[in-house]
Length: 370
Image 1 (cartoon, rainbow, N blue to C red):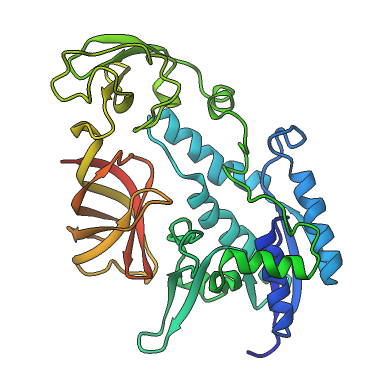
Image 2 (cartoon, one colour):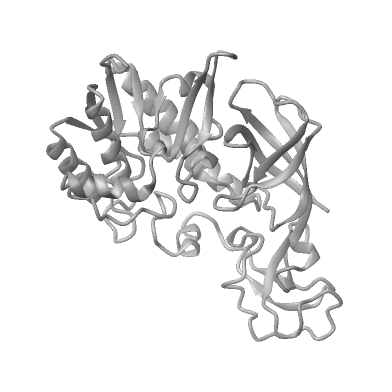
């Protein structure tokens, strides 16, 4: 590959730091950009981008590259956070990391990098891009490290975005990335991986949501309609949730399909019409299992929906691929039928379709059924 000007999104983490180094090793001119996407409470203990920027700047110093601090907070609030709140208020559970990649990291950031004269951008995601000469298409593949693969979060990327994107650490195992960082004596070589959404960080999720969404308490009921307690508002719960229900001591000896009187309770449904949270006992309760789903707002990496047939899919990050059949696919919607029932398929989350290691795209889960 000839020498190119490549802009790397330096997050302050070890993956993007090693990404920049690997591109340097290939002879490219590397420029770092730190993206600031949130600033409402930037200085608190949970979400400090200030420390992340200091870490990114330290890495740039060690590698001898320029770094620019760019504020995308306004765009993030309009394109990602506003949609996040709308979805929660509608009783769904969105995935803002998917939206952030599509709207900020590979749109606003990509546009900014192109204005800086970059030929390509690079991030520390564990995924791969491959050009298929037979089809002329850019393909999105899983990362080599199956335990770190992030293609799920990248499934909305299109051909124009993939053509200008590099994922160098997608070819490596995480242990190798850590080893390289330690060898280079990078200041963040042992930095803990960030978890959670950037604007929430490690803070208690319900406390955060409570600042933006009003509580609308209502009954917690079991499958027979018996009231077991009170919920704070349907927006504060997600399907499959076990913790924080406040009904741990309640037993249901007569539940026909429960998991026994001491089995834990799980959120199974949200009845918006009655403002009721429906719970069931037992992890394998039939109301928690779905064999089909319908998805909308579909986005296909190739630009066209794949042919109907056998594939695999994920309905949430960090689950094993589940064998399924793609049905009734259109450009903007599709249906999946699974070989085995899937647990807690959640409206608002993404259903992402795979053909082996190839990520085909996906959509937002609208409904699930048996």
